[in-house]
Length: 293
Image (cartoon, rainbow, N blue to C red):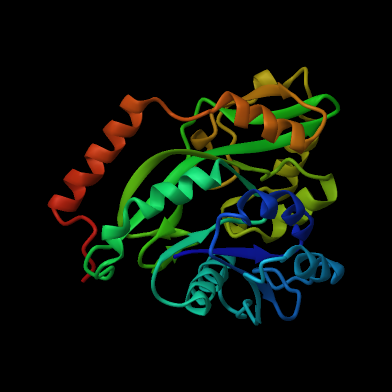
């Protein structure tokens, strides 16, 4: 069984782009929404309750469940609340099968083939606690939408660990498990959104504590355009600025057009690169790097 978990929050509107890409192929889909409509930082966010009606109407196969709970614990960091919400969502989804967590602003390219890929690895579903494994996909991060297209993170091979046979999250979706780096890709809307949303994101995302000069970073984002983006170097907003080395421009009138472009292009890391990363993971597993005390 393939179970998908998604988080609903202030960027709820993106679910209209992300859900159709996975809905036909998942066996079960669960959404987690803060019952008080608060962010991980404890700030109230605007939420159109009508999106829940849209989801219910879209759910023709009755495979969707909505899980509402208090996911903001005072005194916790935003990252701690992020991780806690994902773990509670996994618990709500229940044991067994593949657990896949995809955020509402993430657009999976080729989810049908990814599901087949997971099902081909059914041996990992036997005694999952003893054979913990997670699956990572190439993560295409968007930084800004411009009048004629999108500025996309370039020069960095980023992966998101989205699937596991044993959900035991330690930091957001990250797990202390051997990782299989798979030949699949997922677009992340990330910072490519309206400036009001970006401003809210800077203050409320799970890495907010790592951005010391929030106003300065927001201004950096505001100032970027189709002419000066080439000057942006080593600008990731968290604790490792070098994680985002540069930007590339892709012409597209809408996010739907950009998704179509990447689907057609079939963007995945080279086989040799995946082989190298997976070989390192196997070595780590042999020496016990993933063992927990």
